[in-house]
Length: 159
Image (tube, rainbow, N blue to C red; front, side):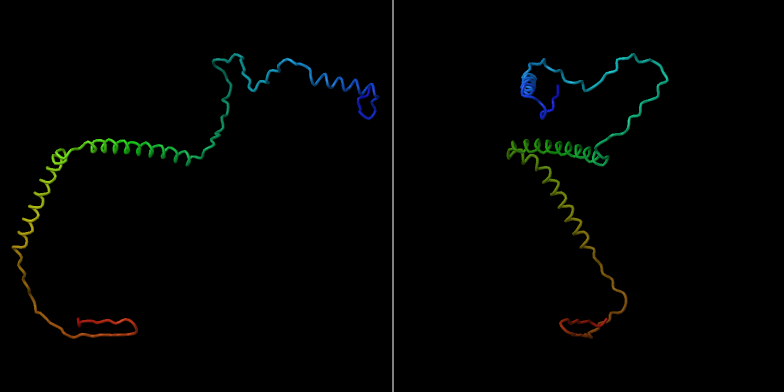
């Protein structure tokens, strides 16, 4: 029986059409998917002469990118710690009263007053003992030279 559609008789064409329709609408059992992996269950010797299997390096990420990722994680953790510390400080400051501010500021104000008093005493002690001693001849020159060229001019006192 020939299956070439050009050479089929009317009866052969009808038979072939019926076969194709039966195949298209045939109820088949569910086909299980093909396995995608294989497990070798053969026994493995405890001690043997099998050479080690090469395991080539197949990293996808370059080393510099991994370093940048690790550094960014560290920076993120540090910034998070700073943010938590700032939050705690600001939470404490939000519940501060005037009496609390004065109690905290009083020691600093006292230290500032003592530092100012010491600075003033040292300054007066230095200014009280200034002695100028001049040795040598004093020369006074009153010659002035002036040059004016174009838009610029310069004056020089004689030296």
